[in-house]
Length: 127
Image 1: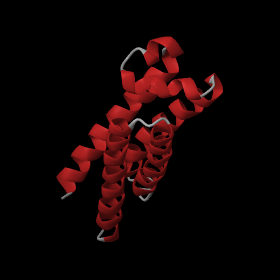
Image 2: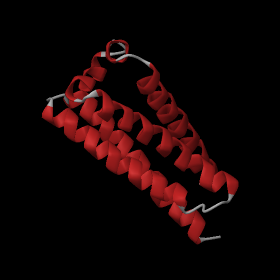
Image 3: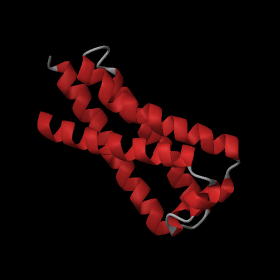
């Protein structure tokens, strides 16, 4: 179980770090052109996109660093809970835009973060 948690945690953190970095450094037009599923950026202003990028980066760091360093490891499942809520907001945006396939993908991310939170809370409780 521990290896599974670590694997999913690291993959999720890398994905969210890449997504947050891309959103920070790319222009709106360049980010939108990555894929049809990135048209949601049109619903938000530049300051909002910066906040979304920072949330992704902070969430990625929060998934790995606390448990890896042993400094407040309870923050890892808390970060997973936060990212699940963040993705619920993303799914809401997809729902509003009638982007059903992308919303299904967001739902998978929500389930993954709920699994990570459940798993890490369990691992930490058994220490």
